[in-house]
Image (cartoon, rainbow, N blue to C red; front, side, top):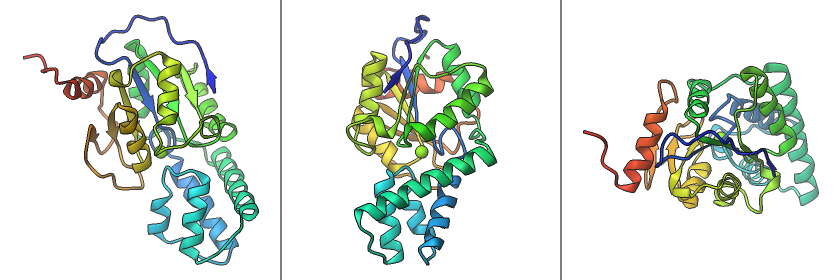
Length: 245
Ligand SMILES: [Mg+2]
């Protein structure tokens, strides 16, 4: 795991200490690129990936995504073929990211800047492997003129992937914060489940996959117009703190 030093800026809000962001489909419009690469692989394998199948792979690890694709196409592939296919999709997605760019999701840039300005700790927690996530992190860093993340955790740096809570717990541990003082922001069901299992308040902002309401999950259509006070409220509501009169 790559962990840069946590900001020494004072925490402005006692209840909320850290905001942990998913990457693909939450901060940047890259879920579509993963989907395009999967569609191209399906065509190479002689089939067409159904929309329902594609939706199931949002936020999933490459192994799970490949298994969904094979089932969708009615194919049987061995482990070595799966690794080759997964690597092809990763390389293709990386090429698409480089050629097409990685635009922000609506409101994501503004929220990330607001969270940093409030002195809150931030983490990027993605299932995407480091070498590909680095393309997005570099793009964000270039756009903002600095890295906005105190900690970044990638899919090849954790003992288990989302929906397991391990990636979020690893990031919280690196930040030195308790789950109850964290908001997780996610676009996928596996990410929402991981955040809830880690013990955080979760804000779900769906991209390509509908999200099921429940637990400490708050759903929003987009991050546009969302501020730090809204995130503080999520933690306070969960802790049973009454909003100011
Ligand atoms: Mg995502």
